[in-house]
Amino acid sequence: LAKTTQPISMDSYEGQEVNITCSHNNIATNDYITWYQQFPSQGPRFIIQGYKTKVTNEVASLFIPADRKSSTLSLPRVSLSDTAVYYCLASSSDSWGKFQFGAGTQVVVTP
Amino acid sequence: NAGVTQTPKFQVLKTGQSMTLQCAQDMNHNSMYWYRQDPGMGLRLIYYSASEGTTDKGEVPNGYNVSRLNKREFSLRLESAAPSQTSVYFCASRSPDRNAYEQYFGPGTRLTVT
Image 1 (tube, helix red, strand yellow):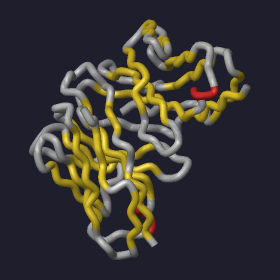
Image 2 (tube, one colour):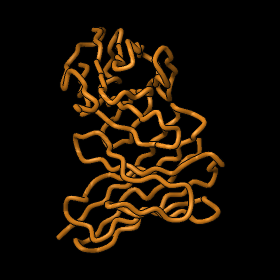
Image 3 (cartoon, each protein chain N blue to C red):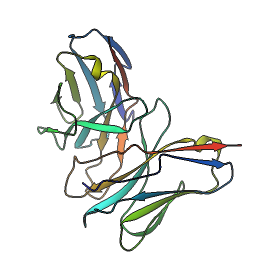
Image 4 (tube, chains in turn yellow, purple):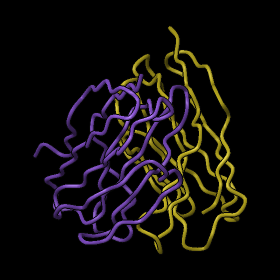
């Protein structure tokens, strides 16, 4: 499994765009990048997945450059309720069990 | 659909006691997982079951056993609890679509071992 590295924490103000970059230098050809959000005392919640280029859904955008050694999760116009821990994972289509969560990025949004 | 359910929500054990954490999903998923999350840390995979009838060790399997009872249920057993097993335990399941990496998590079981 490719190890992922993220910043430990990020601060933002309401209404700003938050970009969290994840490094995965050893990503394998079959690996997808997935992001999860976790609030205190809750299980993680899936946000988005991608393989390359850009993926957008109603919550976030995920950009993965051509070399796939990093990815950036973009949260547009954050609100206080976006304060959470965000995890980046490299998940292989060849293995149903290998999910490795890192320490995640604590995002704190203030008024 | 209830999604992924876990019982109990809270549990306090004394060192050496045993217990079983229960997990069930109603989404007809093949794969199920048990994680633990220590305070301020990320999740670590304990065991997983890629499909009914199979189980495999994850990153931190020592001190635990699992049973995939049927397609819906996946239980985690602590045979002799230790204070180091104080943690929050999350169960998850995953869609059978090979290209879908979304895991669905339960609400967690908060276990304290004294």
